Length: 321
Ligand SMILES: [Zn+2]
Image 1: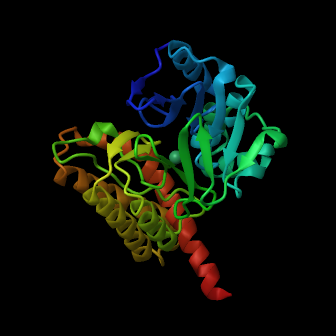
Image 2 (image 1 turned 90 degrees about the vertical axis):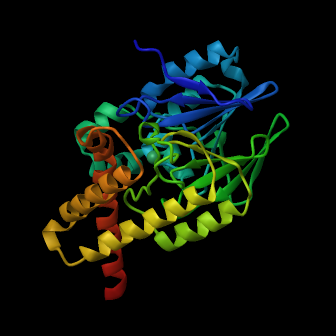
Image 3 (image 1 turned 90 degrees about the horizontal axis):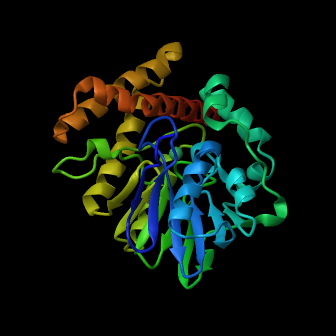
C-alpha cells in the first residue's frame, strides 16, 4: 500500500490526503490540542487506514479523538464519518443541523449520490457507509463553539455550495476550515501568481446569492489561512476572495447563456466551463500540458455542469409557480 500523503501545517494541524479519486484531490484535517484531537472532514470509508497511520505517528490514541466534524454531508467530506466514529469510541460527531439526520440514516444520501455519480462510482468510492448512533451526534447551529482542550473552534452556517454546510474558524491558527465554501484549488495549478481557484457548483443546492453573503461573513472574521478540502492550505488574500467571487459569477453567466439549450444544456455548460478554466489556467501561467490540465479538471467540470443544470431547473420551477 502506498504511504498516505500528509503535511504538517504547524499550529497542531495536519492535512491528510483521503485518497478520493486521485492523489491530492481531497483532504481531511487532524487538529490537535493538549490531550485531545479532532478531525475536520472525514474522507471516505477507505481513508481510515491512512488516518490511523497518521494518528499512530503523532502518538495519539483513538480514545483521544474527541470530535469528528464533516463540513457538510457530501460524501467526499462525510462518507468516512461513520467509519471514523466506529474507530474513535469517545468521539462525538459535530454536524450541521440540516445534515445530522442523513448521517444517522444515510439511505437518502446514498440514493442522492448514486443519482449524481452513478452506481459503479458509488461502489468504488464510498462502499459501505456506516450509520452514526443518534446519541453521539451534536448539531452545530450558526455561532456554535467547541473547546478542544483550550482551542476554540467556532462554526458558521455557510450556504452557497450546500445548505447543510458550515465552516469552522480556528482561533489558534487564525484559519478557517472551509470545506467547499472557498471552492477548489489544486496544488498542481500553483504558479508564481499563487493558487488557482474556482467555484464548486456540485448538485443540488448551489445558491450564488447565499454564497456571496457567506463569503462576506467569513471574510469579516479576518482569518489569515484557509484549509481547503480540495486541497490543502492557502493564504487568504483579497485577490483570492475576488477570484472566487468572479468564478461564481462566471459560472452563473455560463449557465444562463445555456438556459434555453434543452437537451444539450449540460454538455454545453461543461464545454464552456472547460474552455474558461483552460483559458484561466493559461493566464495564470500554468505550464502543465493542456491534456494534463483537462484530466485534472474533468471530474469537477462534470459535477459543476450537473449542478448548474439543476440550479437552472430550480429557477424555472420558481418562475412557474
Ligand atoms: Zn467536496
